[in-house]
Image (cartoon, rainbow, N blue to C red):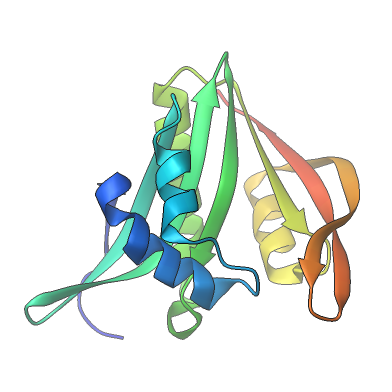
Length: 155
């Protein structure tokens, strides 16, 4: 992958493109209507990683989050399989942290599949602490995976 990748704010008009990327990242992808509904909620925001290609822009990563009452939550974050391993997940995470702080959040929460070792490692490296679990939270074709609930105190 060559060319500069940039992080940009996205809105309800980007829901279908984010949904297409979500489907590449997760077994149970969210559709455009679900993403548009999330983005219509007060305090919700989306950031996308854009990779300009000729006359087109391809989204290679996204983060969906919301902030309210001093707390923020990452609802979903993903990087296209072809773009993984280059640090883009951390770039998106950092951008979401900056946005959450700007919106007044003092803590950021997320849930991650306990068997998603690269993501868990990324979050722990960034300072997230495990604060709970949700057994059987993620439905999968071969059963279910538990979620780790993680928290980062924001400064």
